[in-house]
Every structure is written in C-alpha cells, then in structure tokens.
Image 1 (cartoon, rainbow, N blue to C red):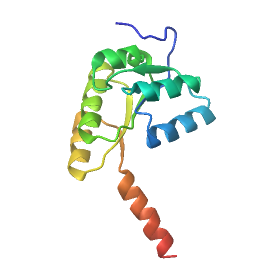
Image 2 (tube, rainbow, N blue to C red):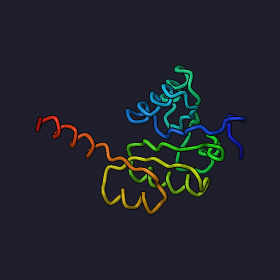
Image 3 (cartoon, rainbow, N blue to C red):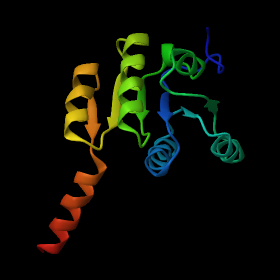
Length: 141
C-alpha cells in the first residue's frame, strides 16, 4: 500500500503527538523539514488537522499505518509515544519496512533501552533521566 501523501519524500514521521511529539514537530517546523504525524487518538488528530499538519490516524506499531505515513520514502522516524512496549514494536516494524531509516525513540526503562537497540533504534532518549540530570545540574550550581 502506498502513502496517503503521494510525492512526499525525505520527511520525518512523528509517532505520538503528546508533549514530546509536539516538541519534535516544533523543531521540524523551525528547520523547515517536512513531516507526517501518526496518532491513534481521533481528538488529537482533529487538533493536528486544525494546526494544518499532515496526519495518519492509526496504531504506529502496524505496517499499514506506517506505510500510510510514507515510511518507504521517509528519512527518519521519531517514536515519541509514552509506552515502552509500543515504542519497541514501532521500532521493529519501522526497521522491517525501511532498512535505511534513521530511528529515534524514547524509553522509560533501562531494560527496554537495551531491547530498542537490539530492535534497530539509532538514537534513544530517556526523558526522566534527562530531566533528573538537568535538575541536579541546576541544584549543584
């Protein structure tokens, strides 16, 4: 199945439009990088449409959803869901569909971080650890 956005290429797929996904989108807009958002929540999808962004409504762990978002021609995927298991499945699916894709994801648990690396993630961020380090750095100034 082809993308729902014909002609779109070298774009970034952003899975999950929560706090982290929105920050990723803000930077993509600032850098003028094309993107497609994937989210399963219809209310969020409506908000995204109102903002004028491209969206595919569906489960980002499914091949069909990622194909609809144009994974075949994407340059990267940012997996920003707040569910380690879904993030892991999304990495596995994305890597299977596009071997050359740059995959950035988030993890909440060290064990899951290891599994994400094994599954093919190129970059993993752990928001809780990052936040803790920033707080400690400020406290120790």
